[in-house]
Amino acid sequence: MTGNPMNQMLGTRGYGATQRTRTLREQEADVFRRVNFGLKAALTSDQIDRARAVADNRRLWFAIEAALVNPENQLPEVTRVGIMRLGRGVQREMDTKEPDIAFLIDINDQMIAGLSGDPG
Image 1: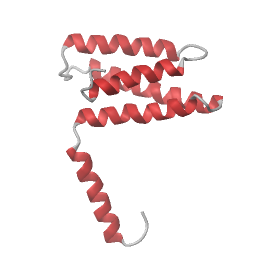
Image 2: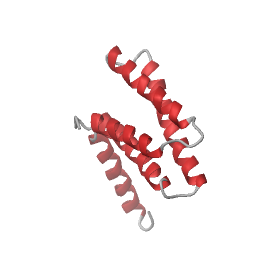
Image 3: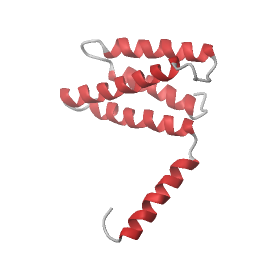
Image 4: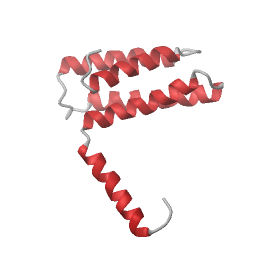
């Protein structure tokens, strides 16, 4: 942002207020959306962009796994275990020589739907 410092401060404050009104689930869904944006772009990109998109997806799923094993996680155990199994499948796919990007996008889309309260 350029220009008047007061406008910059108000703009930043307004952005922060908007983020505070969003639920954690909405914010989590947005992280998946951002990662999926990169994966979708990678479908028609070069190998380096594909590797970056898969690396971003890998970081996301590592973070999810870390959150799931955290003793303070309040999700029901059956939900945590199910997401953990799904994440391990995603990790196995990403470990292949040529990961199926469309599959990764589909799994992330399902997570977005779940976080958004859309049963599909």
